[in-house]
Image (cartoon, rainbow, N blue to C red; front, side, top):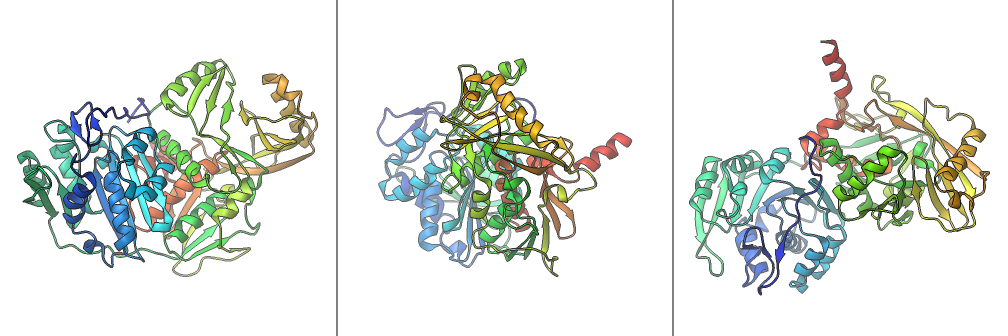
Length: 562
């Protein structure tokens, strides 16, 4: 994967005929014009022996090719709510090359008022067109969707999961051959548990032969509606449930990394202990305010996909929480390079990003109160002031620069100031930043100093106001030139400025190196680590996980030496 487009091409829909939308590029329908919901139930749910197949399964995983309007996901979700395993968790992984916009999805969902409760909840988390996986979690129903936006073969190659059944729901093979190719079928085999069931509407000979070559036993079954036949298949071997992996977890650190981990593991039913001498919301997670903004890069690279997905995941997670304010953020160019780069980024990023009046408007960004979000994530989870990992526990280090990883995680001190103001302000970023924490106060920041010492308080605070005056003198005139208070803390930095997440020893893991974007990146990275440890489908592409692995710095040093 190298530089390229960050967004998938959008779905182009034709609504001119009755019965629902058609895909203009493929000349095919998204679902049966007779009864799309009933077709889903017959061709996919019943064909995969649901709900009986998930009875007593602690984790059940459904894969899909062709997310489309999300109708199959909704029907599956509804069935799970009505007849699911109360102590289990359902994962749904799907692939879509041409994602629908939020508006297109809303229009399509209007045909299914009986699913209104679920469609409303799905629309609140509707994924953007960014390439790569988008994880949507509905913990109250023990249900997770992970929607991969990419070519089917590319997406499947990046998945790490074991499917209990498959819904093959792409457009007809004659119109969408890339999704019904032998490499795709081979990936289905790689990702299937023994006995995994397959349901699909097509009976094309190439599909029958491709599935058989990939290790599936294929049979024709009566079709739905006007179609006389459909296919049903099962992967070789006897179906068996995966053993649940719910280890006891000891998390060291109660900042945003530790709080995100505690939420991810406790949600899965793991016993969780959090240890931090400082208590809740410590270190860089105790600042008076922060901006939630994405890390913006133009290239389509593994770490870019992962960090942008992490920002979207965090924004969706925080949206209903007290302490998060979805105000949008204005990003000013810090130099001539930014002035050229930002308009290009606005075009690349699509909806929610706009270049106007010499600034990048990021509508999906906002500002937050760190302690409030950390408290919400640690709801009902006690934090102990001291303690060691007990036998059988997995230890996860989330102490920021307190865990050095052979010197590859280092401290970066920073300071912010609280200033009085006599005007309302939009959150602003320009290298420094301004956060309107109340009607008459703003936070200005922040410094980045190597080491633990944040430096001279007064000089830095004066510099914050001067920095604002240099970019927006009219705003600086409404803000006091002297700070009423200040805060300093320490972030965890790495040589490549990317997070560190993964295994560092037997029953020992780390989530650190989050720099100044801990609140944007920690929740999804915690979800990924919990998925790995608990044996569930990964939340990130495998190459994204590789980009963040703790051993990467040691491996780079070894390559340079050789």
